[in-house]
Amino acid sequence: MSSKKSQMILSAGGIVLALGAGVMIGRISSQDSSEAVTEADVAAARASARATERGMSLAERVNRKRSGQDREASTPADTDLSSILGLSSRLDRTQRLLAFLDRLPADQFANVYDELRNSPSAELRGSERSLILQAWAERDPLSALTFLQENEANDWERETAVATWAANDPQAAFAWASSAADEGNVNNWLLGATRGIAATNPELARDFLAQLEGRTRDQAINAVRPYVMQYGFDYAASWISGVSDDEVRNRASREMARDMANLDPEQAGSWNAAIADTDTRRDVSETVADRWARTDLDAARTWVEGLPENTKSEAAEGVARHYARQDPAAAAQWLAGLGDNPDLDGARRILVEESFRNSPETSLEFVSNITDARAQEGYYWRYLGGWMRRDEAAARQWMNSNAQVLPERVVRRFNQQ
Figure 1 (tube, rainbow, N blue to C red):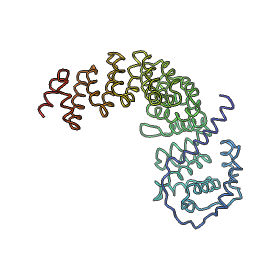
Figure 2: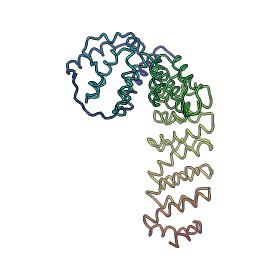
Figure 3: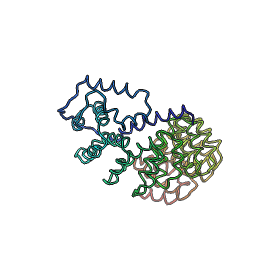
Figure 4: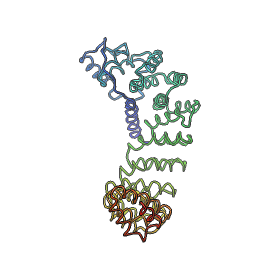
């Protein structure tokens, strides 16, 4: 990875991790504060923070906080957490909480965090809890993690703390997470560590993914996804191709297909067609076709028509969904023209379902194209019955006109009603 790319990733990762504090923000009622800070004080604090932090890397900021240099700032700061939490302005509350945490001695984090997480308003203080936890994990990660281990922490708390550590020291954080016990189907320590590594170095996170298993690995791939996609289509395609494990690479292709198609559907189509694993190529093709059809239906149709049969059937589902909503009759004609491959039944069912609302006649007339006889009859029962409830006269007229192609017991049953 080039030096420039490393700097980009470090900077973006730090910002993403910091913004993660907003995930659990709740609405907080305004309370009176006995230690209010003036607007001038807040403005001065902001200016000081900007001047101090400008041009510093994440590692430099972490080292500064660990050494206690930030606590020497001359701007007034709260010494009581309750006065900060009583502020109604989220911006001021966050600014003053960060200043409070910069000056908080490392050995006092446990008491501050424990008091907040056990308070009656704990569920409303998700953003503040996350900020405190991140600051603690930057200053003294082992202390924070030990506290969480001993106090029945929630999944998000585990992930937040270890992710903060992993962004600064990936090897140590992942090694610790690998040895930490975690109950359930997902190991949140490893999930958080992988996310934290991805925030600053997606390529390093890719190497660690191969060490994960089961649902932990699957969720980690999804967690890494936004950190990969932020650098664009070419980077994402290269990142996926660099995954050494076939199963992980195929899973990543499925997870990132929608984002790839949103960025550049034509490029995504070429990337999709080149996927070696047939099942993955088929699954991805439906996603690519769906996203492409949203912006350029004609181009998506042309792309589907040129695919091999084992991929075309899945890709047709993505086009059929949007085409049937726009022009049911034209969509039916297009889909029928793709041939009689039984694998196209998935797309045929989608067309029946999507066209029924605007054109029940087209929907029901296309049911006969479904090759599975049992599925055919089920669709006649469902959609002819639905039409009967909506417009019985029109439905009966259509049924009687098409009685010769309908299953006999379907006609007999509806005529008995």
